[in-house]
Amino acid sequence: MLGEKMFDKDFEEIRAISSEMGCFSWTTREYQDDILNFLITNRHQGRGVVEVGCYKGGLSALLALVCEKFEWPFYTIDVDQSAIDSTRGLLERLNLDRVATIHLGDLGSFVSNTRLSERPALIILDGDHRYDAVVKDILDTYRLNMLPYAAVFHDFTLRHPTSGEKVDQAVRDCFGTDYPINPIGAKMIGDGKYPIKEKPSDDGHWWEVPGSEGAIVELPQNLVLPTIEKQKESWGFRSLLKRLFR
Ligand SMILES: C[S@@+](CC[C@H](N)C(=O)[O-])C[C@H]1O[C@@H](n2cnc3c(N)ncnc32)[C@H](O)[C@@H]1O
Image (cartoon, rainbow, N blue to C red; front, side, top):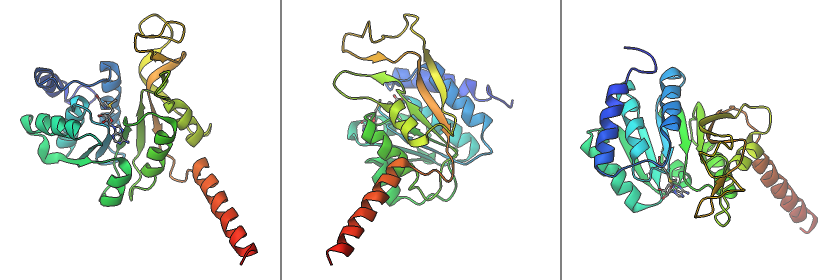
């Protein structure tokens, strides 16, 4: 069977084992399906998946299955040893650890230590959701020796009173208005399904409306990142000062 439903039976088996092992994903079924369908539809655009922030491995296992079927490499990254252990345990149980490279650290250290031999079809950025951290993940994505075809962002319009989640703003500031930022996963339309500013959850989190759980961006090859431009300006300024005071 070809098409979006081609691995549905495998996905169901994986979901059953993940749940039995307590290796859930924070993401909705809708978001997972959007990613898996994107990978299947765009399988000729790249080879491989990089996941940043695997947590318990619930989504990682589904991604690893797609990678195994397409004979792609799968890379997953987390700064937390317990997330790495949980994900490794699940992948081993599913016999999917052979396709996986599991990295303890952030995307920056992964980039410094890894040479990809092919362009990944997708990178999923779901680690630190604070503004500067998301910008850094985007900059590090552009430091990979092979630029992935597309990038997914989770918790896109999520807000929290203290933790400073601002994924959507960081993504918009980096990609500007020239490149489509397509919503995926649950749509935040204020229909009562998800907490909103006027009616936040018990822990204070809420979703910007209109908004979405995730977003996907086909990565432009020659993106001029505003942050890089700022950096260059400051380098230029510093070298001007050096020349003046030599
Ligand atoms: C929201 S959870 C990820 C959820 C996961 N993608 C899922 O489907 O359930 C965030 C994870 O990112 C990890 N993390 C936080 N900051 C990170 C960073 N800078 N780089 C990589 N991982 C990070 C955390 O340890 C945590 O496991």
